[in-house]
Length: 331
Image 1 (cartoon, rainbow, N blue to C red):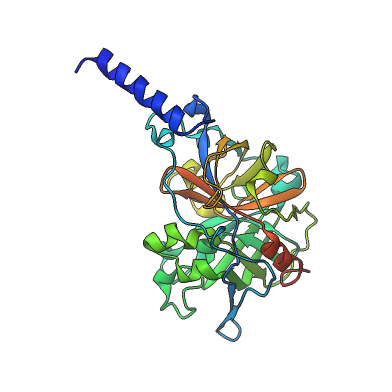
Image 2 (cartoon, one colour; image 1 turned 90 degrees about the horizontal axis):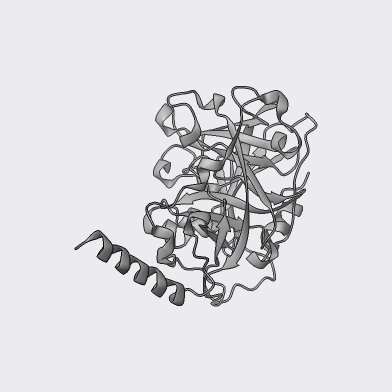
């Protein structure tokens, strides 16, 4: 088969895809796929208290209805987003290595190191952000892993180090985590296909600090966001600590903060299932889990990082999460 024949066949395939997925721009190099979860908290949450070594299940006590029309299931993204030559938007993230230049909401971003056993290999790194002086929001998988269910804390991290406003080995303040809270569906489905099909849509976490933060840094304000239409076309910012951007072999406490902006601009999926939207430049990497997605002072979603090498996932701060932030995690 000649190169010309291959080119013609490829052109036909792309033309067919444009008919199959109307509205998808014909410039995949400028697109990323983003999946957005809207049903966090539908099966409550779990809190681990190290002082009593007890785990408490708190059911969903809200009036919010989670019907079959909002039940989320994993769906395959449109083929256009699997093109191997599509540039990774993570390459456009901006490094912030100079601690003295950090300001605003960057300083309320936290570098996290969670240790699950005495083995250094068990340390998970991630990103969090200060909800207030006492609580840090992150992704559930940063602070819980059922692989370590026999670690004496039922899979919750034994030690969580929190470096407030950190970059390149400097930070505003250091704190240790105390109580840990994660989404109920995540805890019950945190491995294998159970995670990708269900658990990831509730993969959020909150860390209660042993002692409150005393430095004065700007904090984001969670905004109730129940659909992706609420954030469409906004210029959205996120920042965190992507592993692939760090110096190989470096101590995680010297991780450099990176920031990026992008726009969610287009619905691509059946509204009865998980919302899938196109975006420009919103792409995440391992280590950015827990990062805030915000505009101005308003944070709308929690990053769950890259999923299976092609998709960025965010959990929207829906009405249930917003209510919990305002009550159970207030300060």
